[in-house]
Image (tube, rainbow, N blue to C red; front, side, top):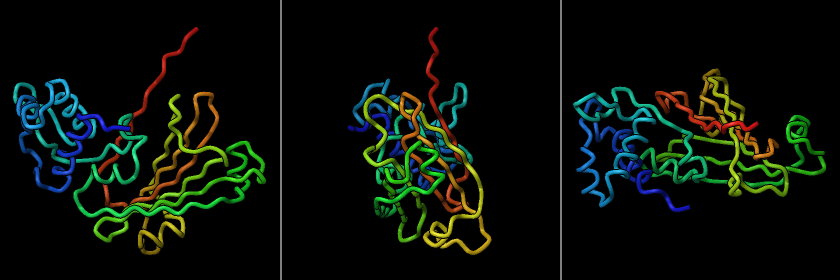
Length: 227
């Protein structure tokens, strides 16, 4: 998928904000300045600022303009980013050297996984471990499971996402990768993806160091019901 221009522009400013290049309270360029600098329309510039505001990176002051927020967070999930690769997501957060490694195997599901997916153990699941490091420091690890024969979640029909955020002691493999001392908690996110028919098609458990982000913001869409 080609990245929308406003997402790319927002990502550029997000990197500068999160790196400290744009300090809290710094005035953001005007919409006209953004449009001229990036060769885009006012609408694209406006959408870029809107995305930065929704991410908690920029705040608006009536009649004064837009400013870098005093305490930045991270929108880890948004409609524009949910189908991104880990490489693209981390590149939007940091200008540091990011390394993403993946390991995929086919496995027999645990009873809990088989029950959650509504499959038989003999059906099997794919298991993808994704590890990310920033300038050599481990910053993320995830375990993702899908029933055999299902690949990804973006089949063009959309999907629903359910997430649970907790501060808790990490699983052993996650603690080892993140180099978490015994007894120290991490930030965990448990994701469940459902297809448009309501069938569970993917489960992912992600761990981050507790101090990586100041805040998390989650965004979802609500489909209107019809009678």
